[in-house]
Length: 256
Image (cartoon, rainbow, N blue to C red; front, top):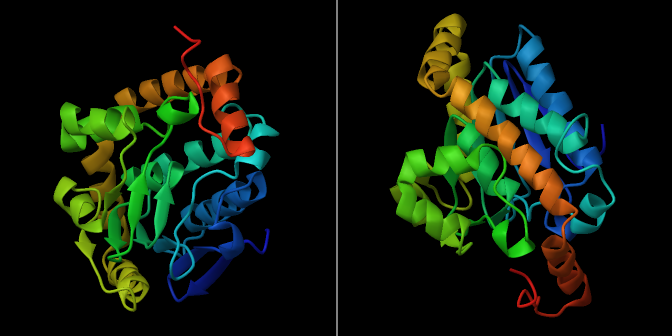
């Protein structure tokens, strides 16, 4: 496992820390594999009952490392991102997220698959897929409209507007805003609380909470994957990524 993903087992819980602070915890393929390894350990180890995922103290994740991502195999098949997107939604044990600073792209969409989310006041959420010539992923095109309604989801997924911790709580994306010096400790405490409850009861409750969406979610994630893979090779995405790397504004006026 890469040292940019650190894991720590405390009793019956596992803590997964994104640890690439110099790059705002931007995710590489190796980091995705490290997270998936830890989630699979949580799923398969009978001694582990809950997990926590967090970043460094002042940053969750800036999303994908674009240079690494452009040299990868995208989000489908056996790619590191594809593996992560298959593993996370099917986790039967509870996962608690602790978020501060940037939570960009998958840094926001992964929260839809966490069971509890605690955000520090400095947390900033954004899903800039459309501005990159791409489309939503991780089931967000289904889960966000269900959670917050079509109009708000359109604002977040089309205009790609950033929003803060208080709005995340209002929309149901986060449970609570917690002081920056306490948010990680509270998430760990909640995971420890879950780990003390009857384990099968917790797993079945989670399964029932999500059961009604299971088939729909599987179908929409496959559709997102297909579109995303196609669009990643498209001219709009190439213009968006080129502009980002060249530090200029993209020009989409040539497209129809």
